[in-house]
Image (cartoon, rainbow, N blue to C red; front, side, top):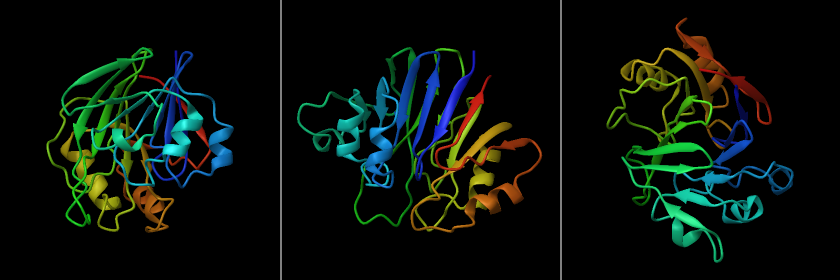
Length: 217
C-alpha cells in the first residue's frame, strides 16, 4: 500500500495512507479557494504559529482536530478541537503515530516561539520526517526515514540549499527528500540549486504546488 504526498504553498503538504489523511502547515499562502476544494483531512498538524504555516481560517474550513505546539492552541479559534504536541512525546490519530521534535528556527526571529518538526508513521508503515522551519541542526534524530520533507529557501530563517544537504548528511539520510519552503519571499532558485547540488544517494522529488507523488517504504 502506498502513501500519497501532495504539495501546497510554502511547506504545506497532505499525507494520505489508505483512506486516512493528514494536513500539515496549510498556511495563509495557500488561497482560500484551494483550501475549500481540498479533501477533508482526519487531522491538521501545525509546526508553529507563523502565518505561512498557520491559518486559523483554513483550519476551520478543513474542519479536523488540530495538533500543534502549546502557544498555538489559544490562537486556533473557538469551537475548534486542538491538542498540544510536546517534543519527545508521541500522539496517535487516524492510524498515524506522530512524534514531535524541537526545531531550531535560528537567531533572526523577532520573538521566541515554539517550533516543531514531526516524525510521522503512516498506517501503511511509511516513515516521514517533516522538519518544519529548521535553520540550525539542534538535537539530531538518528532514526531512519523513508521520506524527509525539508526547507531549502534560506533567508536566515530556514536552511538554504547547501545547509539542507549538510543536515541530511548529519542525520545519515539516504533516499527520498522533498524540498519545500520556497513559495514566500525567499531565493526563487533554491529548489533548483538543491537539486543541482544533491548527491546521487538522494532521490530528490521537487514537487510543484498542487502536485502529488506516491511513495512506499
